[in-house]
Picture (cartoon, rainbow, N blue to C red):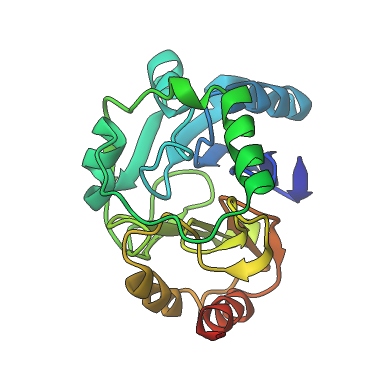
Length: 239
């Protein structure tokens, strides 16, 4: 789905990943669930771009609902997969700590897991080879994406800033739709390793210039990162 010039979303408000379409090639941000491979193929067809135009895939962190088709893309198309060094083991093995999920409601929780089953979440393949990145790195990919470390959801959680697309991709540093309660609006994401650290990390995003803030779950936010991070912090502070 086209959101703006150069900017497309794969998936939906339950699980989303993103595509940056530029003349010199395509950069992907996150890989959703395995079944989103077909969403990627459809979007490329609409754009009249071959799979070979994909230059790289950046993962905002190593959780299974963000790495869905990453290994298939790497294996079949030779596309490099980039991830912060602190999440390198997670994306290659699936090892992660158990974290409390927080509040949940039956219907949205069932919708989340049902959607995952439809999109082959039970067949996630971990990524055998990755390119490790660090905070502040500007990657040699279309759009010159900049890595912004936002640890908390996981040790290697990152945001990806692409000024040329007017976009900031935040993964699960925050969410606009809680996958277990169905609540919409800016708020902290569930399944976060270190909630206090995740909230503190949002300060790093406030000064960035973007007209779109794109989470891994929930509707795209059309507005400034400063306004969104302020809203998330206010939600977290509410009684």
